Length: 224
Image (cartoon, rainbow, N blue to C red; front, top):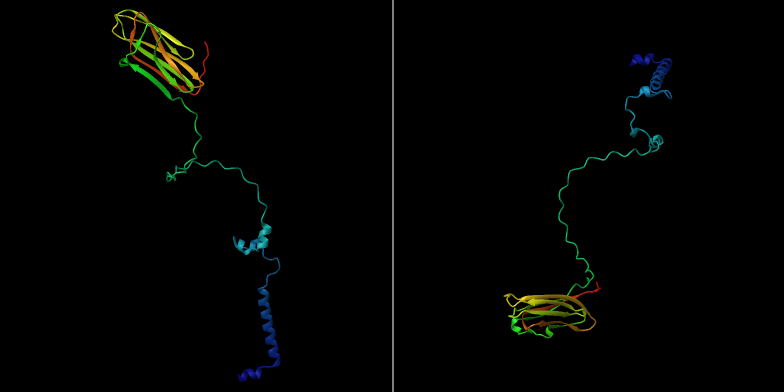
């Protein structure tokens, strides 16, 4: 130390300080890059990421949205899905309007062999049926017992336009002869219909007879 103090002069100190500043300035200069001296050649691939770019710069680099592309092809049909759970029962619907009246009612009057009815040689009322007002389709049947003498029996169903038919009763027959009639009638008020028969020969016993009147909603009668 005594050696250094003896040889430390003002000139030595100034020279040493100058050397230190010179070396420090060179090191400082070596760490400074010239302006615009870094280009794409000095950057490693993918060194600059979106996060390293300022948001304002990213917005400036974003282009306008392009037009929509063409619609793609329809994809393949997917597999059938599982059956879903049964849904809850729906509420009861409102009551519908009443429908139109149908056919009916029907009225019948009848007589059998125990009624003791006989078709005489003059017009005989076999059956009569009273009906309320309305339109009706009427049918009548009468079965007559065979007699020893040939007789012709004629029956009429009074409906306003009488239906008439006749049958021959053969004495040799073992089976009853049957007459069937039908017609229609429209009654503006309560009325009746009758089955009237007569025999040209001898009186003929009635085995069975009936008259059925079925009410209908409407009735149309036309002469043919």
